[in-house]
Image (cartoon, rainbow, N blue to C red):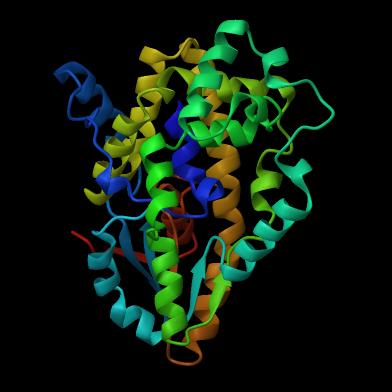
Amino acid sequence: MRRIWAAAAMWTVLAGIGLASECVGVNLIEALPQDQRARLDDAVRDVPYHRGILWRATKGDARMTLVGTYHFGDPRHRRMLDRLAEPLQDAAALYVEAGPEEERRLTRALVEDPDLMVNVDGPTLPERLSDTEWQALARAMEDRGTPAVIAAKLRPWYVAMMLGVSPCMMQQAGDNGAAGLDRLLVQRAEDLDVPVRALEPWDTVFTLFGDMTPAQEIDMIRASLPAASHADDYAVTLTDAYFAGDVWQIWEFGRLDAYRNSDLTRAQVDEQMQLAQAQLMDARNQSWIGKLIRGAEEAAQQGRGIVAGFGALHLPGENGVLRLLEKRGWNIERLDR
C-alpha cells in the first residue's frame, strides 16, 4: 500500500531527487509465484495504455510529446533525454507538474510556516496509533533520519509519504542529489531557452490531502507500515517496472501486495486504492488536460509542438491523460516500443 501513495506523489517528498538505481534489493514482481504473477497480468491486461512511457498525441496541426517520468535519479534517464532532444528543441514550451518557481515557493512556504508539515496543536501520532504501531513507525522514521520526537508531531500524510521512500534512496539523495527525469527535463529546457510551464500551483501537495478525514489520514500510515522495513525491495521493484515500461503493473502490484501483507481487508484496500487514485491521479489528470490542449494549440500556430513530462502513473487508465486526450479526438501513438 505504501507504493500506492508514493508512486503517484513521490515528487512531494524530496522534490524529485535521489538515486534509486544504486539501491540493492529484490524485485518483488519477478519473485512472485506463478499464480500471483498471472493474477497481476490479468489485472493489467485490459487497462488502456498500460505499457509505455513515451507517447505522441496529435490533432490536426497540434502535437504534443508526453513522457511519463520517474522522480528519482537513475543513469538510464539519459537515454530518454536523448530521445527527447528533437521534440524539446522544437517545443514552444515544456509542461511539468511543478516548475522551478513552484519548487521555490514550496520551499519558502515550508521554511516560513512549519505548521504546513507539523501538527502543533492536535494529538500526536503516538496518541493516535496503538503502542505497537507507534513503535514500528518510530523505528521506520529513525531509519529515514527523523527522530521519533520529531516524527510524533508530523502530519500523517507527510509521514506516509516518507515511508514511501526507502532509507537507501533518502540517503543517496542527501549524498549526491542526482536529478530525476522531471528535473533533467527542466534543466535541458532552460539550456534551450524553452519556457517551462507548471501544470499545478505550488501548494498542490497540501490541497491533495485537505479533504481527508482524521481516520483516513491515520489509515495511510497503517497501510504503509507493514512494508516500510522492506522499502529497498520496493524501490528496486518500482524502478525496474518503470524502465521496462510496465507502468500500470506498478499500481496493481501495490494492490495485490496490500491484499497479502497489510492488516487491511480486501474491501479496505480497495477503498484506499480508490481514494488514492481519485485524489492523486484522476482529479489532477482532469485539471491538466485543458492546459495541455491549449498549450499545443497555441504552439501549433507557431508551427511547433509542446513536451509534457509528469509522473508515469498519470498516463494509463480510463481516466489517464492519454485516454482523456483520445476521448477529445487526439490520435495517440506510442514511441518507445
